[in-house]
Image (tube, rainbow, N blue to C red; front, side):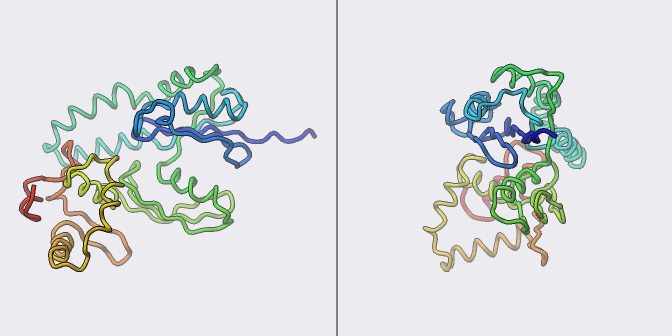
Length: 274
């Protein structure tokens, strides 16, 4: 028998924020890059044509060399979540529905075709032979943490705004397998809770969260004012359960039905400032 070929994978993240690409050969990262490094657009969400081109040029592969090209989430499942959410909260959210759904129908529902067309801008590709796969969002997060790590076995915790349905998840990683154990689901989310405060304090979501994190050490956690805010948050906005999951009071959050994070007038009453 001849020498076994090494498995080559191209990973892609796009159309949300911080688009990026990575080339993996035989489980090792060969090249990785964010599109913003080439486009000079901060948090660039466009398909990472330049990042893909850099990664394949650096690795010396062509697009047809890849055994699989993998996208970071499952758009159809996410679309299902959007539709179910609008249905549950109807007739609230009609304006948001009319703004969001046409974008999905025009672009994201036909993501396979769009990805193939965009890949063709990075290099020559045989559209009939391409093996395009879609990973679950939180599994992508878990894989990006566990597989490059030095551990053969690990407990894996992922927390973000939202994937398809999951907003946080626990996995068991063993060698080359990751087994999902438990997940917290939309609309209850640590990440969206944090983004709501980012929005309320005047920063841009999916961009200003790190600024909020950078400002936090300058507060005095023991001051009466901060303790009063903390009391309001735990009494009105959030309930943390014994297993670490949480429940958000959606009388105060707007992201399920509107194009903003929180109900401004209610937060003004809670905290005393706009």
